Length: 426
Image (tube, rainbow, N blue to C red; front, side, top):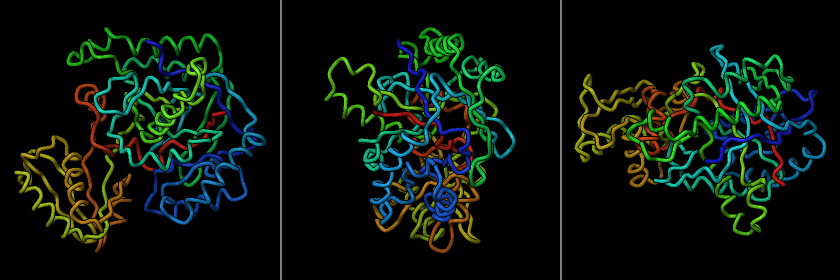
């Protein structure tokens, strides 16, 4: 099986361009907190920043969306000509110092979209960990079509218990050229990156990726999936961005001559790979906030829904646990005999039915319990989900298929991957 993670031609601004405000947080963060994006716009005004080449999801459906799409094109052209003057031919090894002081190691390179699928039932080398909401692809596809640059917030996870892929590069970082080292905007922590271009080191990375895709080793690790094509990488963050890149490639490749299919830039997507076994990788639940109903009203509807499903709320028992809260209201649930095995599955099934019955209700997916609680009040309710065990992530994807959408997040909102490295698409 050909390797699915490959060296890239990576573009970066000159060393005189600081990470703050060049690097910008993933666009699917702070969607219900416009004040965050207002602060980011102030910091980036008149300066080179990846904020100017992405569309924050907080702007979708607003008067800012259409002009932003136009300005993105102009900014990409300008950056290719005047800003992105450094080139890395290989990988970028990264170290992100998180809010608790832990250091998350990563390796930025290319993923082959021919080795990835988001369609249920497919078993490619690269698989989504959560369900893909196809309705979220078109706005992103509008940016991808005709774009001259990409900058990733996609983070992949490798099931690398032996630490064979990323950790050996980290141990040799003192031998590598330092590319950037600085603080990120708005409390995003610290980020440093090194160029990985040495042919011997590139060969070691290739061998490690090959070993992670070994069929015999995969079958020994997951006997219940014996005979299944090995899964090498799972999408940790940025699932819909990767799905958009895939959708664009499928759209484009039918128009290309055969000789361009192997090397066309659109066949690939920049992403950062991390080791799921790293202590710095923290898997956080993604909470829900329902707008348009009070917490008590949400509970009333939830009680009726659970009864219709044959589930019972038995506090203190074993079952699917979550909390509905807002203001001074809080109620803990422990549902037994629910049709869904995971708490997030119960909540998502309830919300699907609630939105169908109450079209005026809006649901947002919020990273961080404090942020979810802050959005809840008299006419909105937070649904707080329990911790998600990261050891179950690969097991769930390999043996059971994708998890419910928006099941987990890798760390707090401020710890998401920032757009930084770029790649030319033309």
